[in-house]
Length: 185
Image 1 (cartoon, helix red, strand yellow):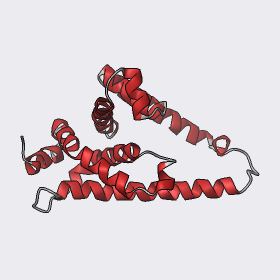
Image 2 (cartoon, one colour; image 1 turned 120 degrees about the vertical axis):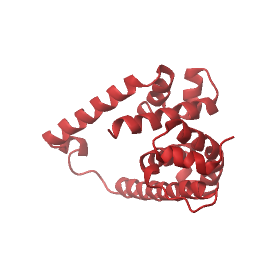
Image 3 (cartoon, rainbow, N blue to C red; image 1 turned 45 degrees about the vertical axis):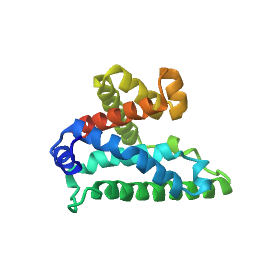
């Protein structure tokens, strides 16, 4: 088994398999931390698995800037810091949604207020995402599509793919890491 510091160095140099190994190594522990930390009202809006997936996606984007502190636990602590931020974002979104539901909608729906240039940019982003998804292995692409584009839960995705929830999490994690790399180019 490769040492964490070796894997971190390789991941910072762009080795996607090292990054996947690091994520696999820390995902269960991170999920347990998120579940223990999430306030109950938030769990009704978003799953702990979603927070972990968002955390890992953010980590993919920022791994090049990760500075280890010398001990093998620093990578996990870094992931917890990202997860903490993602939890704060989710809480803010929950509060904003609650406030929005408390007052009546008086104007047109926000999506109809998008400018023409905003609609063009959204279309371009959707096209890039579609092209990047097409380059993923078929099973990974399907897992990402079901989980993030169709909004299925991990359990629902596992049922559709006829595999375990652990396999879905792994497929989505690898797929999201690959997508982030492809979309950042």
